[in-house]
Image (cartoon, rainbow, N blue to C red; front, side, top):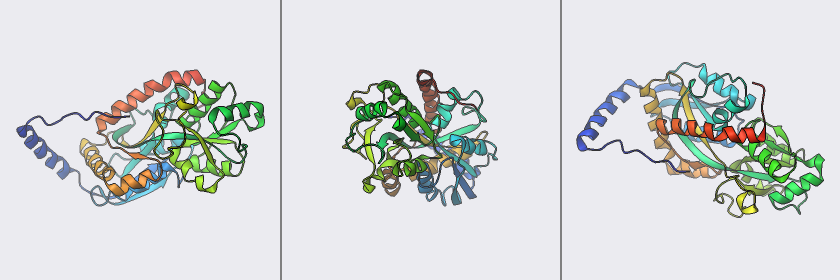
Length: 330
C-alpha cells in the first residue's frame, strides 16, 4: 500500500509564508506535562508494542512524559470510547487498528462512538499483514491452508480458530478462509492476539489468525507453524510462507494499519504538533527496526491522508461483511 504525498509548497515565497505560519502554530501548542497513549489491546502484542516504541519518542518534543494505558475489552471499543470522552487538550492519544473504525460500523447496529465524528485523525503508525497459524492440536502433516481446511472438514471438533477480537480483520480472514474451503470454522475472540497464542500453544484451539509479528515471536518454540500470509506478496518477516493467493485462495489480500488519533475538536495546532512528533519518531532507525522485529512496517501520514484512508477502507469492508454474514450486538 502506498500513499501519494501532495506537494504543498510551490514557490520560495510560499515556503517562507508556511514557515512563518508554522512558527505561530507551534508557539501556541506548548509542550504537555504528560501524554497518555491508549490502546484497546493487551500488553505484549503488536498494538501495545507500537504504543510503547512511540511513547519513548514523544518526549520532550510533544510531552515531557508519555505513558501507555491498556484499556482492553469489547474488541477495542472500550479504548475508543474512553478517548472519545477525554478532553481535547492533547493529553490523551488513541492508537487503534483499522477494523475498530472501518469494520465495526458494518457489524454493530449501534456503536458507542462514530469514527468519522468522535476522533481526530493524526497519523498512520505502521502497516502489516496477517498470518494464519496452527499449533499442537493440528497434525504436523498439515502444511498449507488448503490442507488445514480439509483436515478441519474431516475433524469438526478441531474446526476452530482464534483472533484478537470479534469483528476484527483477522476474524474476517479466518471466516473467509472457511467459506472458501467449504467448512465452518468456529471463531473464538480474545483480548488481543497474545492470549489467543497462549491457547494455541496449549492445544485449546487449533489455529490463530493474527498480525504476523504476533505469531513469528512464537516460532522458536517449535509448536507453531504459519500456513499462509494475507498480503498481496510474501511478507519479508516470513519469506518462506506463501500467501493465500499462492495457495490458490483468491481475493484474500488484506493488510491493516495502526494509527493515532486525538479526541474530537482537538485544535489544529495540537494535531499538527503531534503529527510532526509522530512523523519524526517513525523516521528514526531504532523505531523502524524495533517495529520490524514485530512484523510492522513503520509508516507515517498527514492527518488528511489518514482521514481519506479511513473513509476508503470503511467502504471496502461493507461488501466483505455482507458476504461473511457476521453481525454483533452493540
